[in-house]
Image (tube, rainbow, N blue to C red):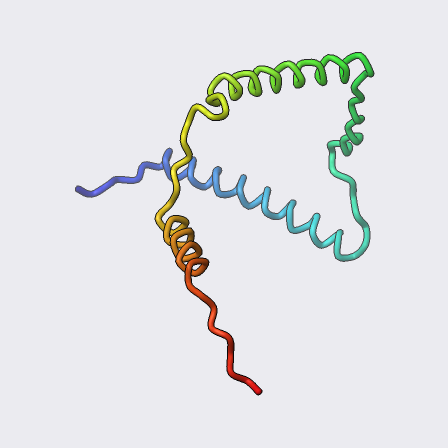
Amino acid sequence: MARTLTNEIIAAAIAGFEAQKAKIDAQIAELRQTLKGDRTESAAPPEPPKRKRRLSAAGRRAIAAAARKRWAAVKAAKAAEKPQPGTAKKSVGKKAAVKKAARKTAAKRPTVPSKTA
């Protein structure tokens, strides 16, 4: 499948490449001026720095009140989930049970006085 290049296609390609070349030449010229020290400013002026937005005292109070309300709801939900003290037994882990048993047996053994004289 051979492609045939018509004169119109070739002319359009040449025009496109020449436009790219002109753009590249302009960029090269700008870089050369920068090297020489003749810096030219770009067409767009630099943006002024954005002003810092301040929050009013009333706004801070409203945000603080909303945060306190949210935390109160979280704490109330946690308190509702928590069982009353003394109603639930604590489960003792295996290691803790072994340690407790070892302490009991150590307390029952009579101590033998050492024979150092």
